[in-house]
Length: 389
Image (cartoon, rainbow, N blue to C red; front, side):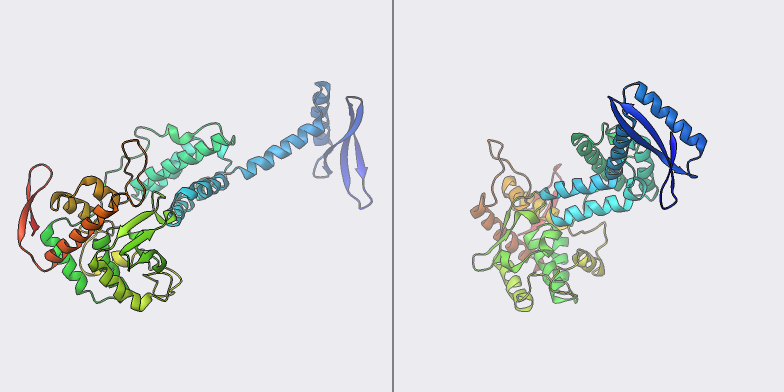
């Protein structure tokens, strides 16, 4: 071992050794940061490696590469990589929503950690923070996301264990199932529709409100509707796969009532990309809270009606009052429906029948809005409910 003094005045500890007949030098650190005692201890450790046939210089490089790799294999970096790959099967809005969950609730506590160093207790500590603010369902959702991220890390050889799988039983508080608030009583549906006609907000929001029950698509699908997708002459809205939750293209037949509303809207927003552009910029769709906020301003509480509630409304009444085939309804809701061979139906499956159903649904809503005669229908469990003729 010797001290190398450089031309610039640096003092560097070096250890000269031979291995496999080749002379090599090992850097032990710089004086005075590394004292003589420390340098001797490092030299002695290197001698032991040489005696065992291990090259200390190569061992040092391997450790450095491992440290660099671990620094790049953080929970956050792998999570973002996973979201990027998984996002190919999600809508852009869904992918952004999942990433926001991770950024808000897991990255601050686990993001900079090497993913292989995180155990069940570490993950539970982060999830308990979410529980403490009362977001029990979110905590369960985050556990599921984390489990998928750890599984991905295992499959790409950057982790060996999935700690999320250990959080079973009572590790997390049990979530109480919540159903999306929806109005399914025909008499109340009529009142809801009349309130839409009387709404005094913007014309774009009013049009979205009036179309929501007629089309019963998901709120995000409605607000992202583009004029290029809407074929009013053929009464069809073709939603591309990348906008759908199930990543399959979807066809929505347009009733005459829907075409009338869209035609009026087109006179106002037809020059923009989106049918329902943002009030701030026609290059963006309307806010995801626009319809929900309008419902609240009209006096409908969050436990009474939601943006997704129009789907439950249509599913219930189309089945129990108008008595359309459940598979037609499920197709129109863009749920996964399989043919007898287990294959997914394409977007035009039963399109002719669904056109008739959508027109009958629109006509029925008109009858409810004008206060048509009421007829009884059978609810699940045998209870009688009133419907409109």
